[in-house]
Amino acid sequence: MTKDLLSIADLSRDEIHLILDTAEAMREIGRRPIKKVPTLRGKTVVNLFYEPSTRTRTSFEIAEKRLSADTLNIAVAVSSVLKGETLLDTARNIEAMQPDMIVLRHASSGAGHMLSRICKSRIINAGDGMHEHPTQALLDAFTIREHKGALDKLKVTIVGDLLHSRVLRSNVLLLTALGAEVWVSGPATLVPPGIERLGVRVSTSVDHAVAGADVIMMLRIQQERMSGAYFPSLREYFNTFGMTVARVALAKPDVIIMHPGPMNRGVEIASEVADGPYSVILEQVSNGVAVRMAVLYLLAGGQEGD
Amino acid sequence: MPLVMDADRMSRTLTRIAHEIIERHHSPGIDELALVGIRTRGVPIARRLARSIHEINGHHVPTGALDITLYRDDLMRHAVGAQPVVRKTEIPFSIDDKRILLVDDVLYTGRTIRAALDALIEFGRPKTIQLAVLIDRGHRELPIKADYVGKNLPTSSSQSVQVHLTEIDGRDEVEIQEP
Image (cartoon, rainbow over all chains, first blue to last red; front, side):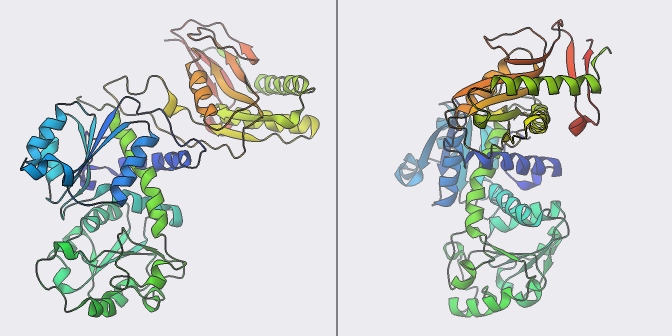
């Protein structure tokens, strides 16, 4: 493994499989009466979150605790960042207290890369701006693999706000690396130009993109990152791109529906679909803990050139 | 590479251990017995012992698999090298008040067994924990002793003992490798 987990692009196919296989073993720990192993005893992990997060932060914290690491949460809302400290200075100060790993969520793309250059601690990217969210893609792949056996040749359709989505970027890199056929769909205003160069098929017709899909992955409309008017109204968005029962019917009968959360019900996904029989949305959340345990464990060891 | 146990000998050794297990669990009742194999090669050995016990007295002994990687005392001690691969622990029964028999292929320093004891205790509180090994090669670094031993094999610590099992390696044999 590399020193840090910043981008799916840094992982080889073998490393991806190693993480997913390790997660398989880690998942069993969550089903024990005592959900804890002593593996990371004496290691300190700092969760440094510059953006609001419930799922990802909780998931990392549970994963760290299950591995017996000492965890420390720094929520920016109550920290010195409000007094004007830069990310770099905050990181240097945290680093001076010798943590072993830093889990970073930041609104700027590449924040993790910058930290990685100045920190000896392992850096895990828990979402950087509109760039990547590697552990989300890994847990998605884990969930798909569990339902479909392998990702090879599967048709995976990703629908929604493609432009602002770090989940999309990480997923496209991961899914294509594992041999899936990836389709993306969304309003033309939210399709980044040149996205087909990542090896995906693009269609602005959701019905077309969803036809015969094995997996449908919905992305959240990220109103907090939107600076302009990308579509006329949320209702019109739902009518044109929302995942409804009728649209799900166009996919394969055993399709699974995924969403990285948080969901906007009635915007990108109908409640009947989110809570319906094909939905694996809550499984994704459970699997997130196992996948993050695997990442923490694998990065905690040494590596070449240490 | 001297062969110390062939397939025939291995099969007879495991049958003998199965008989010993039944004998010693006569009074406490074999109903309380469960086998837990330590990954990797303890698992097929545990399954074979369970099969033997079933053939001898018709009793089904629950059998599980334990991966001790996350409990190793040498994890994180080396700055260089990838982490050991973690495999699944599968103990599909409650170990509370059971008589657990841990099964491994080779008993050497005793550190694997120490880790296995730690791992096992997280699953509950068994009445007793015993240990069965195919080979005891000596050189203990911890106060640990096996209750059932297939073969005592005097070795020097520079040698290595390789157990091959059909389920994993395609053949049954034990050999000593010189450095």
